[in-house]
Image 1 (cartoon, rainbow, N blue to C red):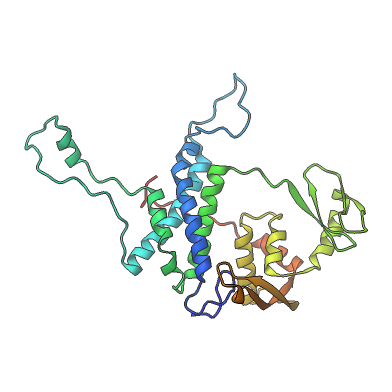
Image 2 (cartoon, rainbow, N blue to C red; image 1 turned 60 degrees about the vertical axis):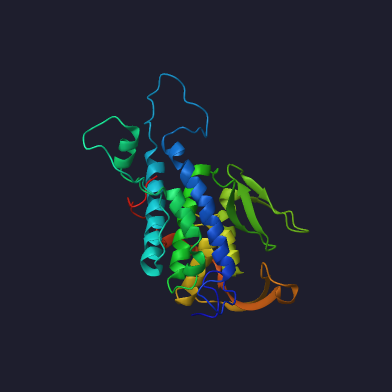
Length: 309
């Protein structure tokens, strides 16, 4: 086992991932279970996220096929890890007990006979996901913990986007001002003013973006800072996943640190005497990270039918 958590890099002497990351994933899975219950409302187009269409136009399909594909991708990932836990650890998902008792020899109209003959329905994905949330303590000790936490977190993100349908980012990353302040601009805005102390410089967004981005590319950032900035780029990954990806790239030598810095952070849930931790972490050129992020493959998974809706 490693000495540091594969997710957050905090000390964890008894597992691949730390207890807090396991608790965070469990909470995320429980939230995703609720989204799984609501997903078919979105797939069946029974929700409204924008203005209604005007009459006389061709009506859209009664099923949102994009939402259905997203749901299938999330279900596949969740089901894969559910089966993995069952096969490796041995626990089983509690299932409704089928009613027992004799049935009439001949076809009859008895409600009780029909109930006894009815096959046991598959376990709903929401229930299976809640069960999986209780297995994260075991998953964190496994050699495959990093892969499991990353893939499960992404599946939960899919379900969250599917149900919540968040608005696209209101800001886009412009670059770095001469004073060192990072600049963002709202979509459609032509000019941005630097909010740096004693600066106030104004920049034309489109004409200056190439120069400002080139300056930003030279900025040295930690994995956490890179995750925040790269979140404004063209990527389908969350900030947490971007940070994990940067860490993996660094460990595998795909990007080389330009320097190392001392950072302080606190453990959640610890006593005061262990709250502050100092770590030496690498810093990278943001341009190197952005270039790798641009070439990273989009995350695509295939559907699986083990769990039902």
